[in-house]
Figure 1 (cartoon, rainbow, N blue to C red):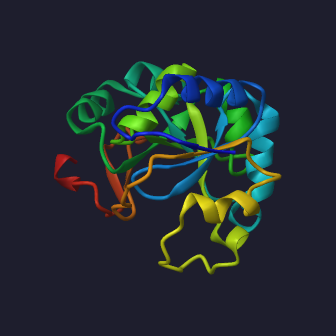
Figure 2: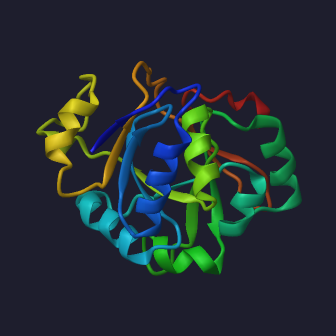
Figure 3: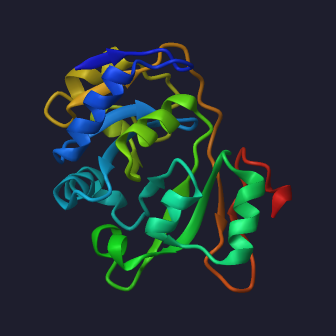
Length: 211
């Protein structure tokens, strides 16, 4: 269940195995720059429904859509020219960008019937980029609920893959562990869905001077 890889040079065989699991509507787990996440393929409705069931009390919060580049992001988010220019200057980075979802995605990931916004991420991690690149589609993700491990959500205890294996046995098909890694903190959240320009929703570790 746990597959060990090198962050800077992950084994493509393992990543293709992860992509195959995603394509079959299964969930996988791996660390990003900010947290361990559960991930699903953006075109697999049944997998996204599994994420909603896991989120439970956080159902009103947006999923993050992980993309490898701007062309992939444009498949799932409506990005105007000014936002496009801002993204070119700032990605990859420790940001979550809020956009209006395309119709293709909105029916799967709306937090409510009237909410059509999604959070787009371009994670500064070679491993994460390679997972998405090999899969060839955006990946829908949510932070791993610490309650699955019997921890409070504000716990700062470091979590390792061996702790996840038993807790996620019936939830995910694979845990990808790059060995040594460090979470940097919360991402900065920037709303780029408005014609009036960027709105800083949360200042995190991402440099907001670009905006």
